[in-house]
Length: 165
Ligand code: ADP
Ligand code: MG
Image 1 (cartoon, helix red, strand yellow):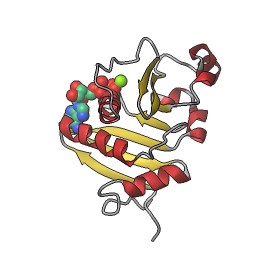
Image 2 (tube, helix red, strand yellow):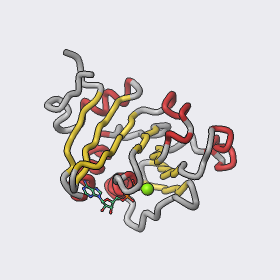
Image 3 (cartoon, protein in one colour):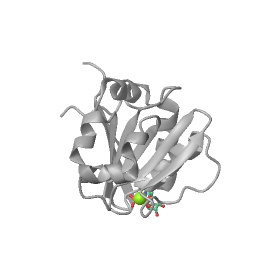
Image 4 (cartoon, helix red, strand yellow):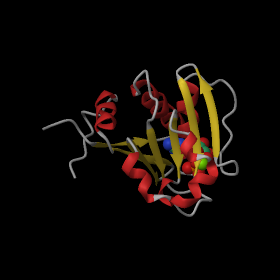
């Protein structure tokens, strides 16, 4: 069997979501320029929590406000630019240019509510789907590109939790 393209993990509490964010940050290549990670799940599923944990692991020390109203929150970190994006209020790809989307290519994009612009999955590397599960969450990670698949293979536990769909 080849490397897993997808894996699932129970996240029993917020600390587990934070740990997943740290593991994703550690599995990113040193140069994460141009990467795109989709964060999917219902309101309160933990998309912003995961983005916050990744940003802190990648060296951000301050607050991580939700981009619900600003739509894009940029972070300049030692390893590069990261854009935390929330597309909840967007209703299609033609609205992306109002966000200055074409100027965001240089950085890593962490995108909440990517379903608003379905074509985004064509250029994304990883989809992170968070679902409610009792008091906790279940996460499913799906590689959307070869480098996303390589990232999944670097994740702890990825070999023991493959999903063969
Ligand atoms: P979203 O951005 O998806 O709307 P948030 O990250 O803003 O969600 O909120 C998620 C909420 O769920 C927070 O209150 C957080 O403490 C909590 N949470 C995060 N991960 C878990 C988990 N694995 N189990 C239980 N609660 C969690
Ligand atoms: Mg959010």
